[in-house]
Amino acid sequence: MIDDAPAPAAPPPPRPRWHPIARCLLFLVAFFLAQFLTLFLLARGLRLAGGELIGGGSGLVLLYVVMAPVLYMLTLPFLRWLDRRDVASLGARWPEGGPPRALRQAITVPLSVAALLGVWMLLVEILPVSDVRLAGLSPAAETPTGALRLLLLLIGFTVQGGVEEWVFRGYMYRALKERWRWWVAVLVTATIFGLLHAANPNVSAPALINTCLAGVLLALLVERSGSLWSATLAHGAWNFAVASLASLPVSGIRVFHLLETSVTGPEAVTGGGFGPEGSLLLTALAVPLVALLWPRRPSQRMMGATPLWSSDRRDGSDGSGRSEIG
Image (cartoon, rainbow, N blue to C red; front, side, top):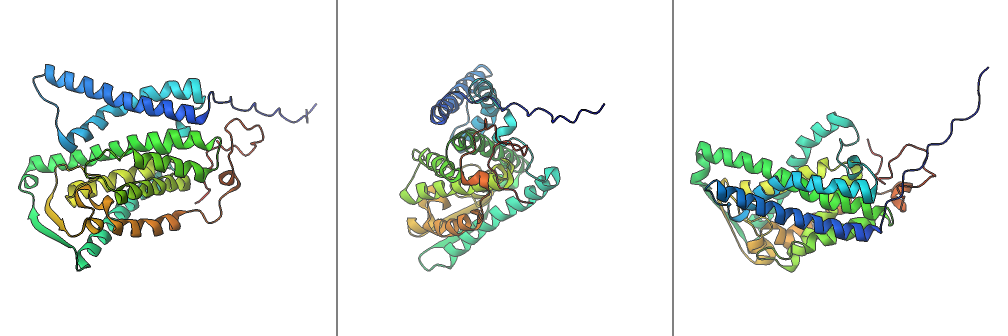
C-alpha cells in the first residue's frame, strides 16, 4: 500500500534571542575586547621572548592577524546562544557559483581595485593643482627581506579585511536584516564602519564620507554574492594596494612600502595625510560605483525584512536576503 500523505513540513528555525541592535552592540564590545585581549597577550608573549611589539601600521596588521582566531572563538557563543544559527549564515562560505566563481573573483576583484586606485592617481596627476611624484623603489623593498615583508603584508591585509568584514558585513549586517530592509542594514553598518575610523590620524569629513561609501560598496558585494569572499578580497586588496604598492597612507596609517611616492596638492584632492580615502576625487569615483552595484530589481526577500525564523519559507533559502545572480 502506497502512502500518499504529504511529508510533514520542517519546523521553523529557532528565534534569535534579544533585539538585533542589542546583539550588534554587544558584538562590537566583543570585537574591541578581542583587540585588547590580543594586544595584551601579544605584548606579554613578545616581552617574555625578549622582543618588542612592532609599532605603527605593521603592528596593527599583525594585531588583526593574531586576533582573527580570538574573534572567531568569541563569535561562536553569540551564534549558538543569541542568534541560534551557524557560521555559514554570516557569509563564511563560497559565493554563489562555488569555488570556480571564487577563483574568478580572486583575480577580477583585486584587478578592479587596482584599476580604481590607478584611475584616482591618474586624475591627481592630470589636474593642474596636484601632482604624483615617484622617486623609484624603496631601498628596503629591493632586498629579499623586503619582498618577504611585502608578501606578509599582503596576507596580513587580507586577514585584516576579513576580520572587519566578519564584524560589519557578516555579523552586524545579517543581524539587522532580521528586522529591517536590507538597504537599511547597509546604511547603518556602513555609517558605523565609517564612524569607527574617526579616531584615525589625519581624519577629515571627506575621509569619513568615503569610508562610509566603502562600507556601502562592500555590503553590496556581499548582497550580490551571498558571501564575504569578494568583500574580503576587495577590502584587503585596497589596503595593500594603497599602503604597500602605491606607498601612500591608508586610512591615515603608513606601513612598509614598495615605492617612494609623494602626492602634492590641496588636501581635498589628494586626501592629505589620510591618503586617497580622504580625497573628494575618490568620492566622485565611489558614488557611480554604488549606483552601478545597487540592485535594479531587488528580490522579494531584499525588499523587506525576512526573519530567520519565518515559517513561510519553503524555498530552502537561509533568510540571507541576497540577490540571486549567476
